[in-house]
Length: 360
Image 1 (cartoon, rainbow, N blue to C red):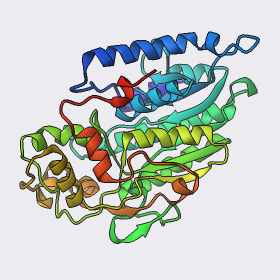
Image 2: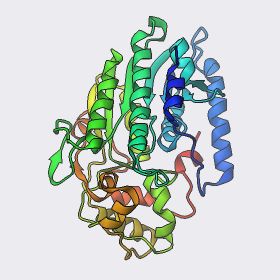
Image 3: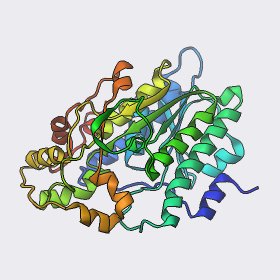
């Protein structure tokens, strides 16, 4: 029988790989990684309450990427033993093939899936083959993890499965405001999100589905791509600039995932977006203003269509007004509720992640 990992390789699926952290003080980077590793090894002693007690395990698919690294750091600092599901084995890692063949490790509290081919990969042509790669990398990994959860014996049965999809579930609209009860769109991205979430719901345990907007942070995603042009004064609105931009700071997304793991009453769909609704132009102006740079060089919609193809470019040139109604009702407190606060965190140069430099 072909393993899930082998099936993905046969399809040409490349699971996310680690992104290099840019402009981060080398000392703090090395120190933080050493400290997290040391903390993880010492938990059996630190948590000793009359007998050896191992920390609860959290498995993270896609844990080596931009969002995954932030999530793993957050969960480790909360006292969990974080195990990344990877293509190759290593310290605090297991392989996708191992999950397929052997199931989940004993003591698993939660499973989180962040794996999936980057839809906006500028080096990949928007072809039927690439679209299938984006689709299969999401559905197959989610299906494999949901199946592993469902079949797990009591000793390794998690309490929660967290799947991270996206606001592409909703149709682009400049007027309508979507809460978690909003209707599904009809385009390719919305259909993919619907299939993706349907796979997650097969886990048989408490399942939390998070729909993030554009994830903002210095070490990856949109900000990593546009920081240099903006720093050089070459930034500008993307498309008309009037389109809504649903967004969330990467640290808030990691916090919301942690909140979903810890809060037993959370179940179902939650919009992972900041409460402030903004336009693309508002984002551009705020980022440029925080950096002290002009932003007068727009990239019109037709250029995005040429670069990415019209269907894929719509993720940038169109948008939705999305609100985190259920996330707020669930008691989640955003660290960066406004775009001004978010830009103040990641726009500075040189960049130092305060969460790393202030670690105990």
